[in-house]
Amino acid sequence: MSGLTHFDVAGEAHMVDIGAKGETQRVATARGSRRFRARSGPRT
Image (cartoon, rainbow, N blue to C red; front, top):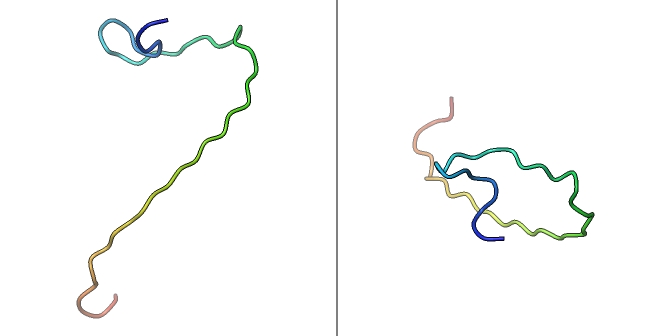
């Protein structure tokens, strides 16, 4: 299999049939952060 199967030749995303795909076990890890500027003045 070559390329990404979720995109057509025009680069548009489309649904992919996974009905025949076997069951697999996967693990995913996500990490994120947020930065905020210091607030100046009273809270409203």
